[in-house]
Length: 532
Image (tube, rainbow, N blue to C red; front, side):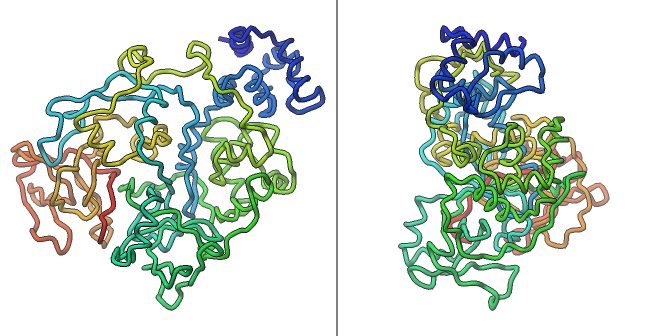
């Protein structure tokens, strides 16, 4: 459907014509306002390069009472794809992730229980326990969440997080548990990791309390004499205790992606300026926290433009400099999205800082037949899942997982290929490891899932000296059980190694007879132990 015809049909559902809408936008905002929608909009849309500004799209949303995010999708901008590019874009520092889900009517793949309802083995394919079912709306799945957490991606320069976490790990911070831990003198908080905000950004760090208003960030990468004392509220803010991690296991290099260099992120006083309504200050602060020069930020925007195949997403260094001196947001929506990706800014936060009345946007979803909102491939008819009934609390394994994790991070749903390192991630690549009470690798302690690349079936030699950094593999034994750990081929034998200090030693099998390699582990989803 041509975009102009699509807009015409959407307006018709509200008994509006473009002429009437143009007149109402003039009455509400003024004919010389940036929010004014011209009556020749259809003519302009004949050129695919001419897209309404964010101000005009906001006016369309307010007058039709259809959601801003849906109108953006009509013009080719799916804001929920921003996290995927944020996780793929080069970056050295730890950044906070925006976990918002904007399209509440989006179809999300969902599952039904197979029998047995609970896993009977310590490790097994997730498909043995769950089967694809009718997809559900995002709003239904969000209603199952019991808590709200914050998420961050660990950067290569986060010396407080390394080597416990790995660059690219996505960590989850629990803010509610924070006060309980800080108030409990016996909690031994020095063995836990916390998500801490300071003047130069964020870090995942162990801490030592020096009093009610003072804290020290602990690091294995720095000598104790170089540790810096910070004051709560003025120099540091603890956002929560880190209780979970999505860990990429394979060392994947971003070929062809520029890696901007930045100085180590040393704590400085928190910024006192209110950035909620000051776009210039928001961009300036976000770039500083990302540790980027204008030239380096421009290089990242070039990668975004090449990835999306749209030159409009590129921003020259001079253009980025101008944005920090001008009050108005970029005219082109592509530039605004680029800024949010490069500087790790939430899109709604960006719009509010630009002074746009986001709270006045429409509330209703545009009907599915008028917007590119497709159901996931390979699932049942979505109409069977689109009922007026509230999604019931799942039982069995699904209910157990929701109870254990308390929140489904739907904002990561478009990023699974990037997180797992697999081009076509599917349920078949996921293995349940939550029943393994005695794992033979420390990363599998308290783990729930392991993602496996089933195309790699031959263990490769690793140059990593640290056993924890060597590749992990999933091994299927002749009795039907699984092992997950380091392994190597030695004269027809498959040797499965345990980690140093483990109670048991290596295990040896006849390769292809007693055991075989199913694939290489590319990602692990785990809860962090209460103590280490």
